[in-house]
Length: 112
Image (tube, rainbow, N blue to C red; front, side):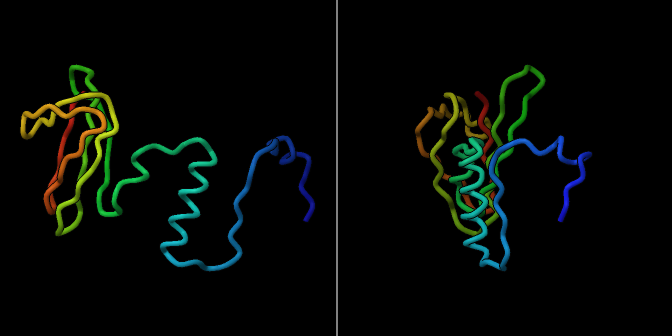
């Protein structure tokens, strides 16, 4: 296949991961996780249990918020990896590196 000169200007350098086969869901997660890590985009969020999703935002006062949502019927224990904050629903202090538990089908909102 020939690449036209119009497209060649966009090709610089880097790494490409090409999958030429079907892989299991578990292996696909590991491939994507490896790509994210090699690209320097990995964060503690990638280490969360599969059923726990996290979103980040800011409130009206500009404080950073972390929303942890547990989409499963079992409790999950998480290690908090951001700056010290407060669990807004329990009004409890949460320090970086401390663990907390999210109940089944529940959420935790932390304000830094």
